[in-house]
Image 1 (cartoon, each protein chain N blue to C red):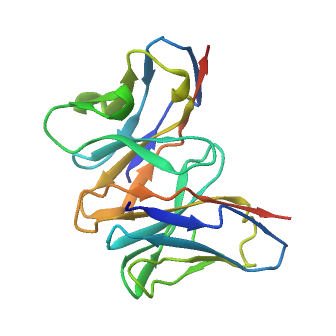
Image 2 (image 1 turned 180 degrees about the horizontal axis):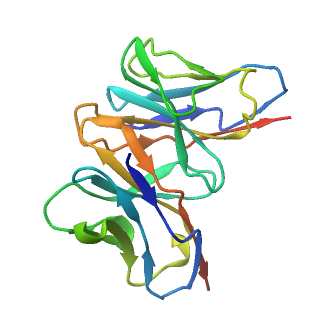
Length: 114
Length: 113
């Protein structure tokens, strides 16, 4: 069965520092991978997605993620964090044509110090 | 603008009452989903529908019911059989024959008094 793990429940970084959020997945084939962000009391917004091709994908708000098949990882990065980036981040794995098979990780809460 | 609208945003319920959460989309998406979110547990699938007049149970369907009479609408009823209904509920949609990318509404927070 497919699964997603996010080892860090809560991360705190200073504004302007770099950020890396970890995501590992288990899936039988090449997965479709996603990162979503959720502000408190809000829905989820898509940051970026990987389907195929270049393993380094760029997203909105200056985020990027790298797909590493050998490590079954899809880590999210940002070179310089802004206070507005404080939120919960979810990694997810999906399958083409089967939205109901989406699997979300437990999330990583990001706090940003001024 | 296209999107998903959930209402109400906040809802309070007494024990033993059924409540219905609304979800409407104007994205012309075929598939719609309901998720439940609890702190530290990510999102869990309650029900999904791939086409009008058809829906399937997800991982935690007990105590919930849905209908899909129109493509745009996918209401969720939280029944009195749901033992722990206090949670944040998210509705989502996707293009069925697509990449599986989900689009989310703003969520509804249900609190049982």
